[in-house]
Amino acid sequence: MRRKDRQQTEKFAWQVADEAPFACLSMVTPQGEPYQVPISPARQGDCFYFHCALEGKKVDCLEQHPNVCLSFVTGVEPIPAQYTTRYRSAIAFGTAKPVTEEGEKMLALELICRRYAASAMDGYVQEANRLLSRTGIWKVQVEAITGKEKK
Image 1 (tube, rainbow, N blue to C red):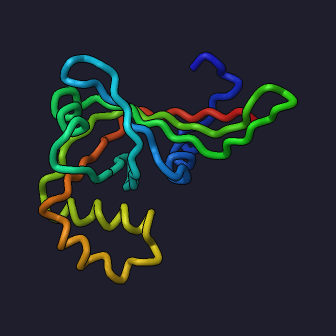
Image 2 (cartoon, rainbow, N blue to C red):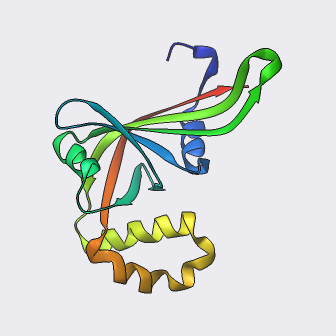
Image 3 (cartoon, rainbow, N blue to C red):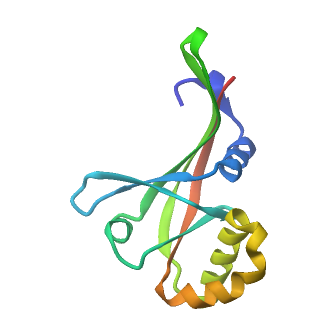
């Protein structure tokens, strides 16, 4: 990280990741081109889970090049008078792999639902069972995470 004065602790980075409303998943296409999409991840330990379709460009990228980068940003506040912006960010690097075991898929869907639909958990099991066979679940095992803050 170039701006060491903005570097934060690993604990800070995990907190930013947990608080961010979404993440951007950066990948490489099978043709070697950069590709990035927003996702709604949920974390357990040092792994992030996200759901997607069973096929498509994202899946093609992940199957061909499983090394990925996730970026998270919170607390964005433009400061026009100073021509700058306050923010808190985290970047996680890891390896993505598909989740195929049904128990882990259900766990991932529960984590995602608890994060993004906590008020509707009473219907989670029924909905998860209905969608399980046509929902792709991926797990990113984080190998490194960094945090940065512009105050």
